[in-house]
Length: 462
Image (cartoon, rainbow, N blue to C red):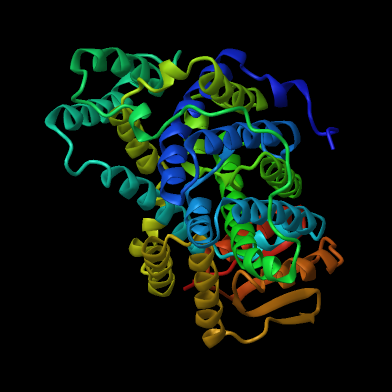
């Protein structure tokens, strides 16, 4: 399991990863505390579960700098179960979620991510950015002018500080600065400690107190399946975002396995299931996090906050965290998706908007993803005719529409072609229907860029 770990994976730039871990730990606080209260879980329990999740993912995960914790998306799934049946059934569902994720890791479920169209991935990321921003805005009504000014100042400083220095993450500077400033406005600013009671005992390992009956299974299986889908979807779609930001590879199968292990251990400690947190992962990378040291420091910092520096943690003003997360939402939004408008790819744009709308309306990432994929398949099936391969006099001609689910047929065909100096690959009659297929055609053209091999490029993109 650990053969892929190396010094660069673990340490990297020590100072940058250390600072990033501190920022990540603080950035986790408002979402975990806020959603734990919403779900009916003690904030201390959720924060402890988040620390355990971070540490397990650090030790066993497949993507360095990946921030995972008791995410809000998972809390939304657990809330009805807790309300109707109580915390013990939530714990049982968390354990089952971990087991399901572990099983799915060995079934290579991570490979399904390649069948998710780029349009739907855009929708997922942009919807998540909107949800992050909305969750911050929803905290503002009824607050005083001091709060609004601190939020505004935080947003401005998040953009301004990097122009002055990159030695220390701007979020860390702002948290320290605004905490000091808040002492001058005692009583007029909401603090982290106001979100919920942070006093609790150290959780101990135990199995949930639920009857081992078929009725119990009927209660916990549906939410466990939903938690598994939401957790894996959010984690597997966060991985390529971090891959792109860090320009480094990952091991999605190992990440799925690590998520399962983390949720099993968290369940034994009586905590809620967790998954990747895209906003916090982005802020970790933006703050300099590249190695496992960043998330290890994040997990240890949470434990230090809970057991040693509780009084310091509770004095952080939530206005500063709101401002930071607003900028994170902005950074998370994929503005590259707007090119669908300029390129007049109306079908993909409609699917993008519908995917975003469903996720934002329901707060259900898995549902939005599933419907988005179905819409893509239906849209492309309306145009779809099977790819046709013809060979004549050394010229290999590929005809027909190419989209995310059929691009592997093209790749497999090209791999089987016996290449000689007289080979011609004619792609001019391909109808490329989405961005994933465009990249596939580009990659094939680059691979075939050899002396004597002629590639006639496609000119049809819809």
